[in-house]
Image (cartoon, rainbow, N blue to C red; front, side):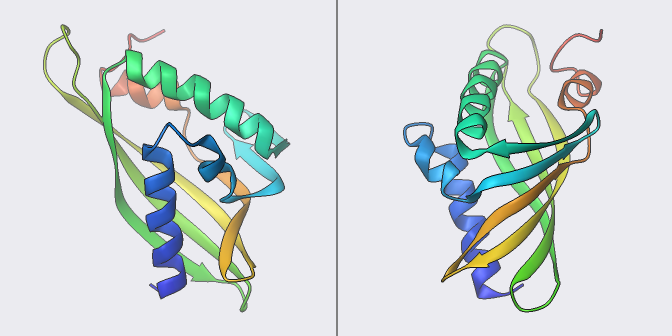
Length: 143
C-alpha cells in the first residue's frame, strides 16, 4: 500500500475514534459526496455526515461499542489521482450486563480523490445493512 493511503487510513482511524472533534472526520470527505447503501444511492454533504455520525456513535455507545479495528484494506489505483479502497472493519462490543463480548465485521469501499497532499472520500459504498450485521453478531435483537 502507498504511504499516502497508509496516512489516510491512519487519520481516518484516529478521527473516527475521537468523538470530541467531528470536523476531523468531515475533513476526510469531499464537501459533497455520493453514498451507496443496500437501500439506495444519494448525495450527501459533510454536515449531514457529521449529524448522522453523531447519532450512530451514540447508538453504538449504548450497545457497548468499545473499539473499531481495521482488519484489512486493499487499494486499487485508478490513475494517479483516484484510489478505490476496499476495507473490512471489526466493531468490538463489551456489553455491561448482557453477557459475553461480541464483534461484528463490516465491509465498505471508498473512492478517494487526491486533494493536494491528501485524499478525500468522494464515493462511499456501504456493502451491508449495519443493523442486520449487528443482529447476526448478537449485538442487537433480530427484527
